[in-house]
Image (cartoon, rainbow, N blue to C red):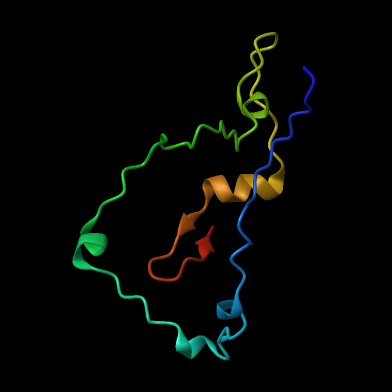
Length: 99
């Protein structure tokens, strides 16, 4: 071609006129409207999306220390301080142990 082609795209000016100059900034939180829950929100029952254990296996008791050993079939030896909790009774309305 003998002519050089020039493409022009004349965009308008960005809309940042004087309407952005007078912005009222909130001075306190009291200027926000108060949120009120509707009866529809209050009555909604959320359905859980997980099981009772939340998908986490919790092992709070060391079962190897409790179960009998298969080799010698002997009961595990308890400490004397732990034995008093197994043989004690609870008083009514007090929560204290009585031996």
